[in-house]
Image 1 (cartoon, rainbow, N blue to C red):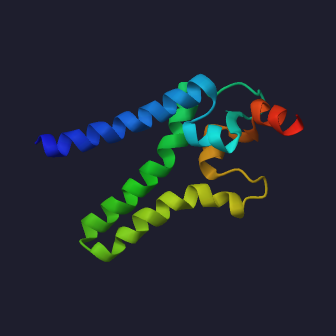
Image 2 (image 1 turned 45 degrees about the horizontal axis):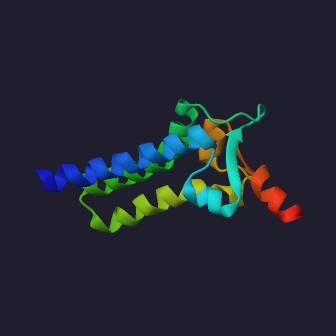
Length: 123
């Protein structure tokens, strides 16, 4: 039983940590390294917990739905649908005119260059 619960708890802990970091600072570790941050569209405030959870959980829910579809139909070849569903959200910036991913649009968020990164570039 622990072999099932431990990975699930680790996975949930990781994603809640990501949500917490976005709410607290507007950045996760990877986003900070890229020199960008996530803010609310129109208000320039940090995301609320609900918005951060929506932004992070939406691609995960889509991937889980793809995996459930593969398991229900018992067609293991459909597991690639899960990966495709997960990738669909970040890749949606490529065909969206406003360059916002669908997970950003759902959370009313926008990704911008951080002030810290801009200060380093101008110095």
